Length: 119
Image 1: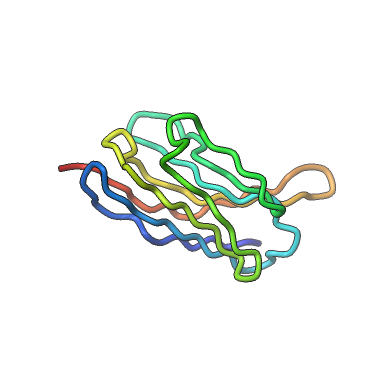
Image 2: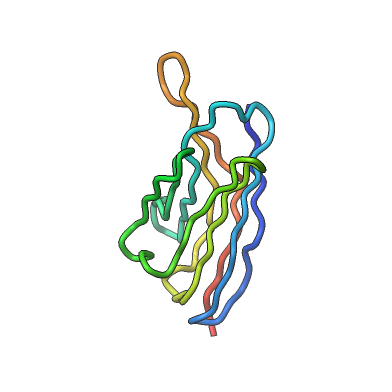
């Protein structure tokens, strides 16, 4: 099993910044991709950004140029630096990790951290 422990959410004004962190523990060997998803009230969970073990990054279009994902493989931590935050970024943000199994991928989720962008 893999446990994901998130931190860094909170309330911020539009235009402000927050940094989310997610630390992985447990059977962390062979974790491939780590990333961040978010879910706003009444909406489906959506990918924000993810990063492979080798550093390949992917972002959803609405956060490109504002959010930066990074990863420290020595500490098994993934970060999401969020700048120029907008009210529409308000959501619960979930850390995600995936590792290959013999027949399919194993997927793990954190408990979620609330990000609220409001004046």
